[in-house]
View 1 (cartoon, helix red, strand yellow):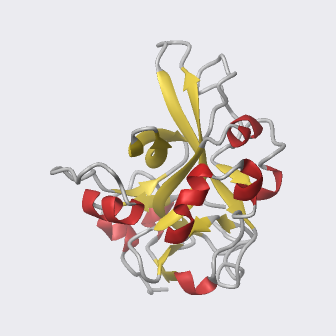
View 2: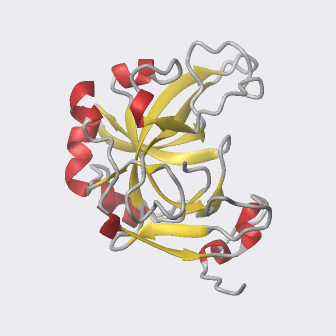
Length: 227
């Protein structure tokens, strides 16, 4: 699972990690330290003009959905790699190559968890953020007529690093996989949906304040080893 995360990279970080064609911007992205499903996050898509950063609702809503977002009660913030080709919500975007990358680190609560437990903040050992594999879709809000990009993070079984914490983890891509992820046929991209090497990952325990999305700011990711 990946149901809470942070996106606190600067534009320079994003530009460097994603080999963006556009020049760096003078203004940085507003940092987000405690992102939850159904709220907005930043994703990177490949377009004819190159890679672009866009805002997307976390939780993919199929384009065929004719009701409001509040009426979409299905859990689609994570998509299982094992059923990505067949699951109703994802098979269309997958077949159409609507793949994206989410630059994000994440929180995980050790299982079995109980109310008030402190989560672990999980981040790369050598880079500013993980390149998470995702899918995007476009859904039209029937109330406003506005087209909205939505997204999901693809998950797989755990590597040895994640096994003590959870039985699922995000699919994390290496820098050398980005071009293939965006451009390969679906059957080739499917082979990329595997756990990353354990030595790519680090973690530390953080405060239980992360349990509430009302709490934001850099304190969310600070180590907290107090019992």
